[in-house]
Length: 88
Image (cartoon, one colour):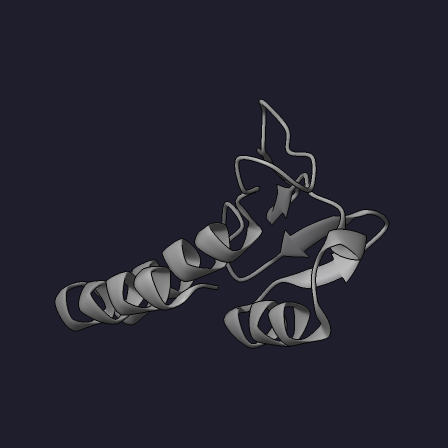
């Protein structure tokens, strides 16, 4: 995450509940840049109490994956998934 985005996340954290800020930070990390790793036009799916983000973990650094895990997302089978942010 670049410094400008990191500052925006810090501002966000000061003004909304922690869980909301965690979800937004995770989505910002996983959002594909204009050029580089591919993204999906339908980036999320929620089913069986699991939120899945359709982006391949191979495109992320170890630091990004570690942070996403801290926020509640697991890298598995070519996607990120979270029961923390699922439908239940």
